[in-house]
Length: 256
Ligand SMILES: Cc1cc2nc3c(=O)[nH]c(=O)nc-3n(C[C@H](O)[C@H](O)[C@H](O)COP(=O)(O)O)c2cc1C
Image (tube, protein in one colour):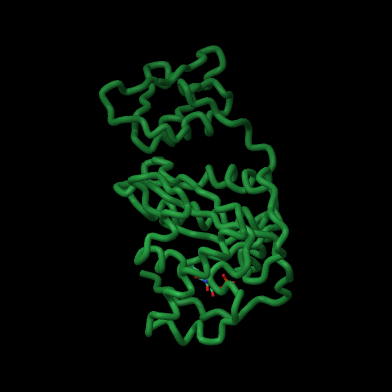
């Protein structure tokens, strides 16, 4: 699994220290060696990411390059986190596939339990089909006494479900995935990466709630058999800008 180039290995032991499964030992000279009798390797690649000399290679799992640009400094990133907003008024322009792919490429680096990376994506690209889907969901919601008040004033042709977004991104995993939270984390990454790249997003809990009853979304989205949709997110270019931060509850924290 692991190849070590002894000429360049610094025998520093960092790879062993960082392995989440304690799979790497050090021999008498300090060189890393793989514990053959250990649990299965997660393939997380951390051993290679911390190696100061690049002496360690994982079979079949080359690193995807050096960390060269960490982007904004920490304070800018915190400001960015505060400024991200749900977008509910979209420019109808479709987003090029290349840009959607760039967003999802970033999301590949989201954490997942046991590094299982179980999330798959389906993008509903056709805005016209989304409007039809929304109309069906709206009819179901209007007929539901618990939801009707929210949709009472929706006019003919309006889409209060996907808010006129040109696309909808669905995160799905196998029904028996280890932990459904992985998809939610990935969707949160998507939300941030899309915003960073000039797009706007909004989670669509309503669509998932409705879909759970009617499975309309699942059918329309060609989700693979044996998969469950875990998150749905509208995506497109935002039409407007949010110029102020909204009020938030004060922080509630207990130090124990
Ligand atoms: C799981 C989840 C489901 C949501 N579902 C919807 C939805 O169906 N429709 C909608 O307009 N906003 C939806 N939202 C967006 C929330 O209303 C929004 O995040 C919240 O009001 C805070 O606003 P902000 O995202 O601009 O900070 C959802 C958010 C989350 C996290």
